[in-house]
Structure formats: C-alpha cells, structure tokens
Image 1 (spheres, rainbow, N blue to C red):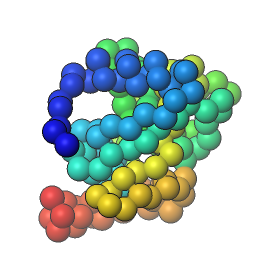
Image 2: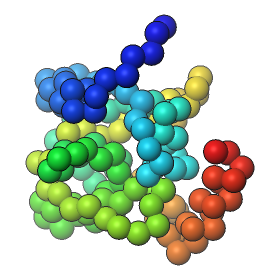
Image 3: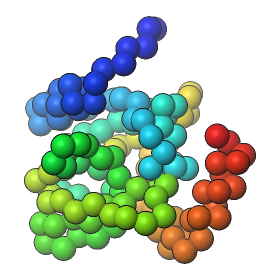
Length: 140
C-alpha cells in the first residue's frame, strides 16, 4: 500500500466529520508528545466519538489553530486539562465540546494495543525526564 501524506488540517477535519457520523477513523500521528505509548510516524491510532470522556482517555482535540492528541489529566465539569505522555511540563485546556474523538486502539506494527488510562504513567510524572531520556537513547 502506498503511503500518502495529507496536511493535518485536511486530514483531521475529515476525520472529525467521520467520527461525528459515528464512524471509526485511523491515522498515523506525528510528533513525540505521546512517547513512549504512541510513537509519532510509526504507530497508528484508531479513534471514535463517544458521548463522554474521562481522566486517562487519549483524545483528539481541536484547539485554536491546531490539533492535539493528548491524555486527559483532569476533568472539571465541562473543562478538560490535557498533557502529552511524552511531555515533562505544559498542559492544554479545552472543553468537552472540543473533543473530536477518543483513541480506542494503538497499532504498533502487527500488534494492536488497547490504551489504558495511564494511571501508573501519570503517577511517575516526577521521574518522566529520566524514563523518557533512557527510552529516547535506546529506541529513537
């Protein structure tokens, strides 16, 4: 199968439209913000739109001027706080209405992984710098 690169704006707008219709979408995200669980440019993610989201879900969100695929670390009513698993600091804020879809599976080569809620990874936040440093030296 040939690989085709499509601009994020076009791809993710179409993906959002499909998910709003109740369809599942799959694409290969770019970047390192979700390491070590999602390797940008290598792993593919499957997403669907669900009526609600919870702490620990990995979601695709439309923010002003860009999209992010990050984990929810806090829910306060309709307000969500997101942070990438591969990020050491920095969060994004949005509302539940900004969520386009939730990751239901991560395809790692021939293996499909159902994402967990990241409870242990979130608890290891003070040690992420060291864990990610080792991971990057060994696997990137």
